[in-house]
Image (cartoon, rainbow, N blue to C red):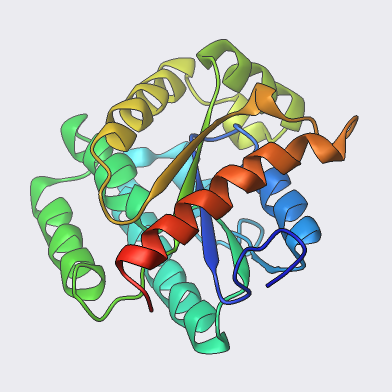
Length: 220
C-alpha cells in the first residue's frame, strides 16, 4: 500500500477524448501514488501523420498498430506486477475510433471486420488482464477544442472540427455501456494539478473506494 491505501499492484487506466488531459492526469496520479506511467507513444508512431492527411488510406494501418502496441503494453504492465497509471485504454480503439471510421466510410467493412475479429481474439478472453479501474475524464466539447488548440499539434489543429465533435459524442455514448472493468467518472474541473496538486486527493479517494469494493467481490 502507498500513503493513499491503493494497492501497489493496481493498474489504473485513464480514458477520454483527444485533448481532455489524460497524459497530465496520468503523470499527476503516478507521482502521488508512486506508480509507474504507461504513455501512448505518439512521437514514434509511423502512421499518425499520414493518417491525419488521409483517413481512408491509413485508418486500418493505424488501428492495427495501436492494437499491437497497447496489447504489448498491457502484457508488460501485468508481468511487471502492476503499479501503473496508463494513458488511454485498449478498449477505446475498437468501439470508438475503428467503429467511427467504418461508419463514416473511411475504413472498409472488410477491414473493420478483420480488425474487430483480431481485437476479440486478443482482448476479449478470460486470460487478458483487465485494469482495476478506468477513469473517464469528462468536460465540455468547447473546452476540448480549446485544449487541442493550446496543445499546438498541427495535425490536430488542421483536422475538421466535425471529426472532434463526432469523437466527443462517441466517447459519451461509449462510457455509458462500458463493462470491462469498474469506472470512475471525473470532471476535469474537479482538480487543478498546477495550482493545487492536493485537489487530486478526492479523486484518489474515489479510485481507492472503487478498487477496494471490486477486489472484495473479485479478489486477484
